Image 1 (cartoon, rainbow, N blue to C red):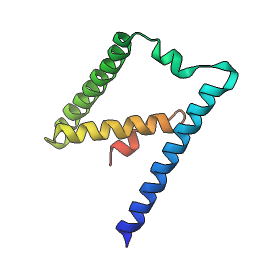
Image 2: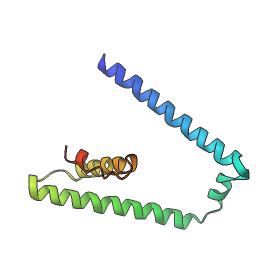
Image 3: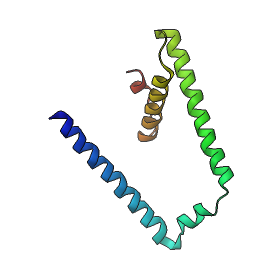
Length: 107
Protein backbone atom coordinates (compact mmCIF):
# COMPACT_ATOMS: atom_id res chain seq x y z
CA UNK A 1 0.00 0.00 0.00
CA UNK A 2 2.86 2.35 0.80
CA UNK A 3 4.42 1.89 -2.66
CA UNK A 4 1.11 2.75 -4.30
CA UNK A 5 0.76 5.94 -2.22
CA UNK A 6 4.35 6.91 -3.03
CA UNK A 7 3.73 6.34 -6.74
CA UNK A 8 0.59 8.50 -6.66
CA UNK A 9 2.49 11.30 -4.89
CA UNK A 10 5.26 11.08 -7.48
CA UNK A 11 2.76 11.42 -10.30
CA UNK A 12 1.11 14.42 -8.60
CA UNK A 13 4.54 16.00 -8.16
CA UNK A 14 5.40 15.37 -11.82
CA UNK A 15 2.09 16.87 -12.95
CA UNK A 16 2.74 19.95 -10.79
CA UNK A 17 6.19 20.38 -12.35
CA UNK A 18 4.76 20.15 -15.87
CA UNK A 19 1.99 22.60 -15.01
CA UNK A 20 4.44 25.10 -13.46
CA UNK A 21 6.72 24.81 -16.48
CA UNK A 22 3.82 25.38 -18.86
CA UNK A 23 2.57 28.32 -16.82
CA UNK A 24 6.04 29.92 -16.68
CA UNK A 25 6.47 29.43 -20.42
CA UNK A 26 3.08 30.99 -21.07
CA UNK A 27 3.81 34.07 -18.98
CA UNK A 28 7.30 34.46 -20.42
CA UNK A 29 5.99 34.42 -23.96
CA UNK A 30 2.78 36.42 -23.44
CA UNK A 31 3.63 39.13 -20.93
CA UNK A 32 5.08 42.52 -21.92
CA UNK A 33 5.92 41.39 -25.47
CA UNK A 34 8.79 39.31 -24.11
CA UNK A 35 9.79 36.63 -26.57
CA UNK A 36 11.58 34.35 -24.12
CA UNK A 37 12.16 31.51 -26.56
CA UNK A 38 13.36 33.92 -29.22
CA UNK A 39 15.93 35.33 -26.81
CA UNK A 40 17.13 31.85 -25.82
CA UNK A 41 17.28 30.75 -29.46
CA UNK A 42 19.42 33.76 -30.38
CA UNK A 43 22.17 32.96 -27.86
CA UNK A 44 25.56 31.56 -28.78
CA UNK A 45 25.47 27.81 -28.10
CA UNK A 46 29.19 27.79 -27.22
CA UNK A 47 28.66 29.95 -24.12
CA UNK A 48 25.64 27.92 -23.08
CA UNK A 49 27.64 24.69 -23.28
CA UNK A 50 30.56 26.38 -21.49
CA UNK A 51 28.22 27.33 -18.62
CA UNK A 52 26.82 23.80 -18.42
CA UNK A 53 30.33 22.36 -18.48
CA UNK A 54 31.39 24.75 -15.73
CA UNK A 55 28.52 23.60 -13.55
CA UNK A 56 29.41 19.94 -14.12
CA UNK A 57 33.04 20.62 -13.18
CA UNK A 58 31.89 22.52 -10.07
CA UNK A 59 29.60 19.67 -9.00
CA UNK A 60 32.33 17.08 -9.58
CA UNK A 61 34.88 19.13 -7.61
CA UNK A 62 32.48 19.61 -4.71
CA UNK A 63 31.55 15.91 -4.73
CA UNK A 64 35.24 14.96 -4.77
CA UNK A 65 35.88 17.28 -1.81
CA UNK A 66 32.95 15.78 0.08
CA UNK A 67 34.16 12.26 -0.75
CA UNK A 68 37.71 13.04 0.35
CA UNK A 69 36.70 14.61 3.66
CA UNK A 70 34.16 11.94 4.57
CA UNK A 71 36.73 9.31 3.57
CA UNK A 72 39.15 10.75 6.10
CA UNK A 73 36.57 10.77 8.87
CA UNK A 74 34.35 7.74 8.22
CA UNK A 75 36.33 5.58 5.83
CA UNK A 76 35.92 4.89 2.14
CA UNK A 77 32.63 5.46 0.38
CA UNK A 78 31.62 5.35 -3.26
CA UNK A 79 32.06 8.53 -5.29
CA UNK A 80 28.50 8.22 -6.61
CA UNK A 81 27.20 8.45 -3.03
CA UNK A 82 29.10 11.72 -2.60
CA UNK A 83 27.60 13.03 -5.85
CA UNK A 84 24.11 12.25 -4.56
CA UNK A 85 24.79 13.94 -1.22
CA UNK A 86 26.19 16.94 -3.08
CA UNK A 87 23.04 17.21 -5.20
CA UNK A 88 20.88 16.99 -2.08
CA UNK A 89 22.91 19.82 -0.56
CA UNK A 90 22.54 21.89 -3.73
CA UNK A 91 18.79 21.29 -3.72
CA UNK A 92 18.32 22.35 -0.11
CA UNK A 93 20.58 25.36 -0.59
CA UNK A 94 18.35 26.51 -3.45
CA UNK A 95 15.13 25.58 -1.67
CA UNK A 96 15.65 27.31 1.66
CA UNK A 97 16.47 31.04 1.69
CA UNK A 98 19.80 31.62 3.41
CA UNK A 99 20.00 27.85 3.88
CA UNK A 100 23.08 25.78 3.33
CA UNK A 101 21.74 22.23 3.20
CA UNK A 102 24.57 20.76 5.23
CA UNK A 103 22.45 19.20 8.02
CA UNK A 104 20.75 16.90 5.50
CA UNK A 105 24.11 15.94 4.02
CA UNK A 106 25.20 14.55 7.36
CA UNK A 107 22.41 11.99 7.38
